[in-house]
Amino acid sequence: MEDWPFDDAEDVVTMTVRQITHGGQPILLVSHDASDGMWQFLTGGPVQMADAMLVGLREVYRIDPSIAELADLPLGWTAERSAPGQPWQRKPST
Image 1 (cartoon, rainbow, N blue to C red):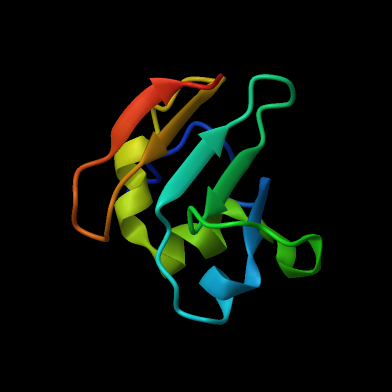
Image 2 (image 1 turned 90 degrees about the vertical axis):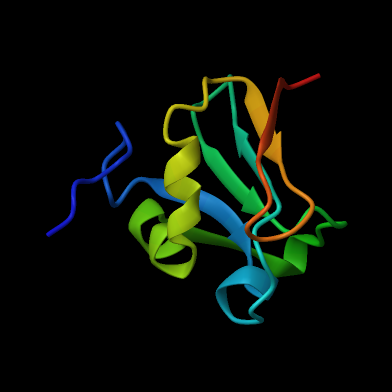
């Protein structure tokens, strides 16, 4: 079994959208919320509440193991990339 890259437990609840979990769209925007520590894994496009899903961090990691690069993303920060395989650009949330 590989080393778990996150400080958070594998079953911590995260927010994502069905376009990522079921539609094959890539994760292009990640947020680590300052208020509650929740991770959000998004496509970078508009989000409809009907598409929102709560899933465990392990499930998101299974879909896209490259999110391990963001395991140290501080609370209150976001990371964006233009496409899978491109470098993540980190910045404090505004």
